[in-house]
Length: 432
Image (cartoon, rainbow, N blue to C red; front, side):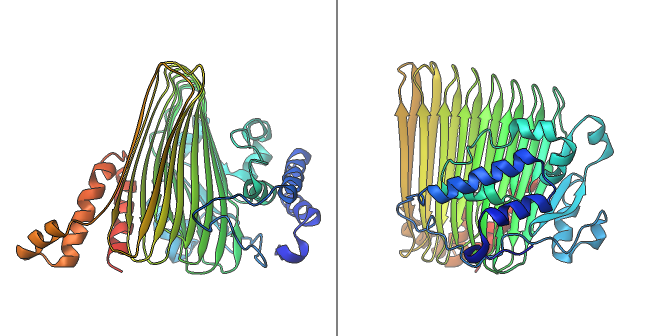
């Protein structure tokens, strides 16, 4: 199904998409309600960058994968390595639909659900309906409404009470299309006392893509969830990412984020610490080069008592890249004995690159501890001179300085595979 948004994007196209997927009536109605909100809402005013001014005219809204297999060997060579690295638990989306899925029998035997969102709607409808679009409203803003009306692909993860998943569950989206819109939706539900690590990877070629991606994480009481997301979209991609987490009593949600790809990238990771004793940490690496634009935001919303949050971001910019970093620690009235801290450090490698850091605190309670700090600086020429005088070439000296700058954050990443992947992507950017 290919839809020209200028001519056919409307109720008929959304209904056709829903019926093609054989969705239940409630989900079709959700899509149509979101479509009406899309028509009524203004374009978000994301100042300082043009990321919100997305031109979606003429894009193809849905493209079925030419591959759908249970055999990893039958996958395209470029994605086969991603499957081999997945330790056996993976959902792979190519273009708009599921291409490959594997869940070890021992995990399935524990009641763990890890499948495409489309399949989950068919096989676990009540569970999906209970949680889908509960952490972010379909009318939160115009581009979320667009996503809610057109979402396709994606994955659903459910971990039952007191079940610990020993290996990461990996969700991969891959495309080499040109002129395609991708709308993946990942829904993660960790029931009471459950533990799970989810690894997201987003990869594409150089073609033009418009990506509207949503990740929802529901961490119920005493659950522990880690979501590691590596975004390395190609240079023709505009990426719009909304991550939302809701954390219940004594639960933990940790985000590990690598924002490295796409021509334009707008990402917001919003965590609501709803239950007493809940906690969350976000570690984010941003590396932009050439003419990339990045608008990256982190929000920790404290609602319950004795909640805690920690945000640490490291940004490296080179060439003519531009980034905006926004962080908000929002402590609501009544959220007593809360602690929330944020730190952002940026390293500018040349005069053409620029970053605006906007750390914020909104505190409506007195019994709290909170603070923020942001630094932006260039490579120290004195240090460079010292290293070069000892025989280290300038390019190698800069690479070593960048490695030293990022190492304190990369060393916090609990997953060795994620750390290694980020290091490879950073090295590739340093060398081009």
